[in-house]
Length: 324
Image (cartoon, rainbow, N blue to C red; front, side, top):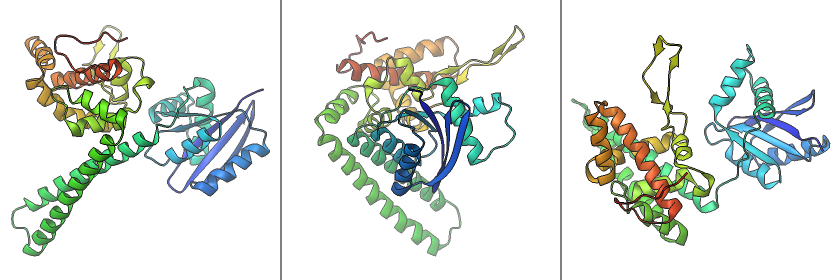
């Protein structure tokens, strides 16, 4: 039985689809809510799309409910990096860009690239990710308000308002931190993984929660390199022929939350984690720039975290499991 291909362009209030079977294509638009999901399922059934590979981009959070619904309905679902679809769109020399056109491009990309299937994370990991992202948002608001408060000549009325907001944000931050701790302690598996991660010098409870929430299940990764790629910490080479050779840079084609969370950890680990410290000293001795060394320390720290979780063995500076 031939498999139908469904390209989905998701927005906040609605999503556009393009259904491919051979040379035939059908377009439609649905509201991005539970009712729209049910109508989509009926629309697919009327067209005989029992075997289906659906594909959408990982933009924002608007795709998650639809992807979960389709997966639970028994369809194959792929969630891909938007840059992959953009490169495919450029390769087709497309000049128009609308939601309808984008859905068709995603469908053709899915048919050509056959991206790997996506599975939703367990409910406890989804909730943990929501909590750690909420904590990050609150801390960013706290920093913004403190920066505003430091402005010279600020109005007393405005100052009082900011101070009141800062007090509120402080309580909210503490409450979310307590909720995260309670959530992890309430799950034997998460608690064990948190304890393994915090055995690594440089990783505290906050970063451990971030890693668990953003990485998801460790079994989804075959190697430390895959984990580094997920965080956008793999090097990007720029070279053409013999005369053009740019400096290697981070690809940054990955989870920005992981990169942000690992930065300060790497700075701390650079001084207090014996493995990371020795690694950084070798790079500095070789004349590498400080920021490149910190980026390398972030990658090293993440791969160590992966090794500790994969082997279920606490950190040992004298031994690291050899993982593929």
